[in-house]
Length: 129
Image 1: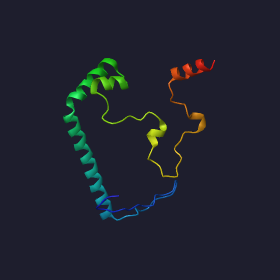
Image 2: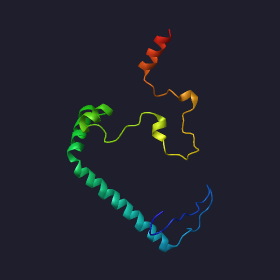
Image 3: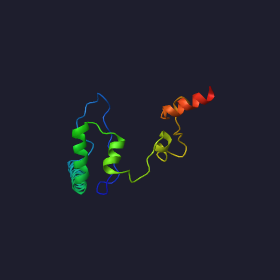
Image 4: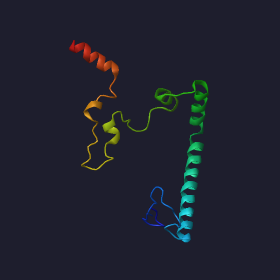
């Protein structure tokens, strides 16, 4: 999907099916190549721009990686500060708004508490005892 090409799709061969020709012309193939090149070049430019803009942050993270090898969430908060947006902590929050209105994005009953804090569960079981 692209302004220049429009909304097009091409039938893909089935597994094991022989392909003798492309479902589009050489001119279309050329346009696809040009548009893919623009996307890749744009992504590369944006990446380099972000790296330059955040060079000091990248250097801090790199130094810490040399020290620790693996960084966790708390390390990143210490190095870069809190995220500039609200974090999502549950599956329901993460998938909210990603499906249709009819889609049920709730976890199956057996997985409802998969990401709950173990201490909280322990405290709850002590209270029940």
